[in-house]
Image 1 (tube, rainbow, N blue to C red):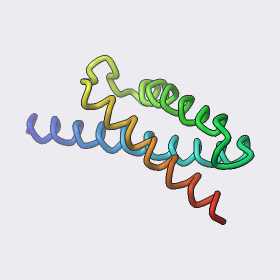
Image 2 (cartoon, one colour):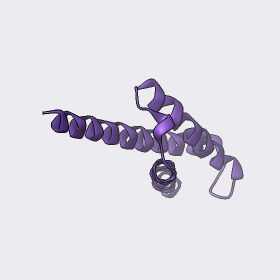
Image 3 (spheres, rainbow, N blue to C red):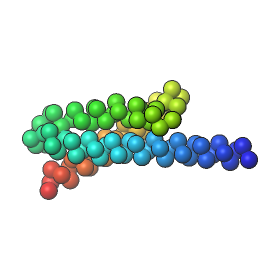
Image 4 (cartoon, helix red, strand yellow):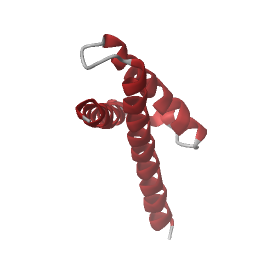
Length: 95
């Protein structure tokens, strides 16, 4: 029974971390579209940096133990945020 609860908690943690990383990446892409004048405007990267910082805070507020994150976890959340920021902003730039 305890093993099942541990698996469920680990699954919830993974879903929470992935969801937050993806949503902050999309939000950063939307903000980049608003603040940047085009694809070569370097200010468009600032929302991504803010999203990477906000990820940890939001996940911590949602009850995930961020202190237990390994390097792999940090790289995963950073990559997911970057990928969704890149795709979102790229789609908005091409529209």
